[in-house]
Image 1: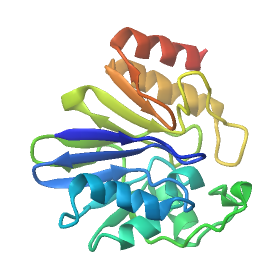
Image 2 (image 1 turned 60 degrees about the horizontal axis):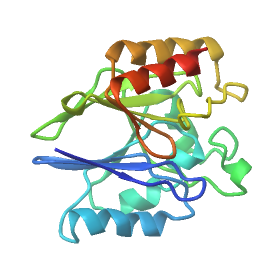
Image 3 (image 1 turned 45 degrees about the vertical axis):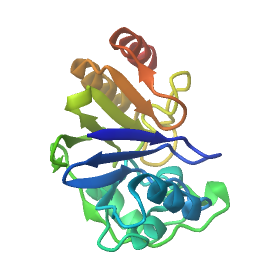
Length: 214
């Protein structure tokens, strides 16, 4: 199974492409600003004749979800998955709770399917497990790749050196602490944050998580 980070552009989240023998998925979509470029980046890796099966979102926030509609429509049969707490915001194109207004942008109305804690996405030679990790927002999700001891966290950990926001609608500080402690118990070898490079090494991941908790 191949896991490849497509580095964030400007305010976009990192896109993470996960390709297995039985399918391909992407975690997060970035804003709508660079959605055409994101499609080209994905096709450049999987090939023009291959397809993308699904997009898994870590959050309804615009930097994670704004490009999901366009990317999904660019690959026939591609579905968009988000925790049920975030479905209404995406499907109605909510300008406010997605934060699209903070970026002076519209939020495309996006059809979604729910993803819940503990769901498994089998890719043949590996799988991705979904974890409900509220705190930054009530719909927050992380995605655990046990074969690589890697977790994708989205806005729960924006960067190694930048704590998440909890002071806006949907945020909850106690939930952030609980979610970070849950990740700590997994003892990840690497963490992919919202933006920037991966946080690598068991001890480094542990140190970063403890610092964020504090």
